[in-house]
Image 1 (cartoon, rainbow, N blue to C red):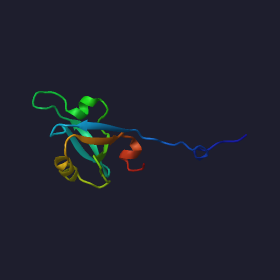
Image 2: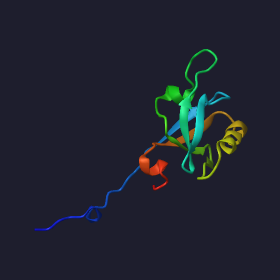
Image 3: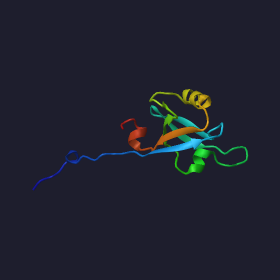
Image 4: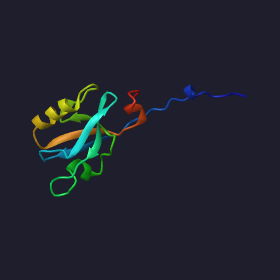
Length: 110
């Protein structure tokens, strides 16, 4: 009889990336630190009670990690203030790239 250990299987994990194009000056979401990464912590409605473009896309969920703004990669250890500076100085339309959150990503193990 033979027993297999979890190391006997190689499972590749591919975390999907999603892209959202933003044309408005504000993102209408809150970003916070999750471990060493910047993640979506809440969505904010605009002055008319409507969702922002990111939430309205239906592609991004709470906890998803922001990994890129246009051609600028968001590196581990960046602060929300630094990311806000990048957002504010980026031309519109702006492409935001998010990685689906997982416990491994949020724990810094992936």
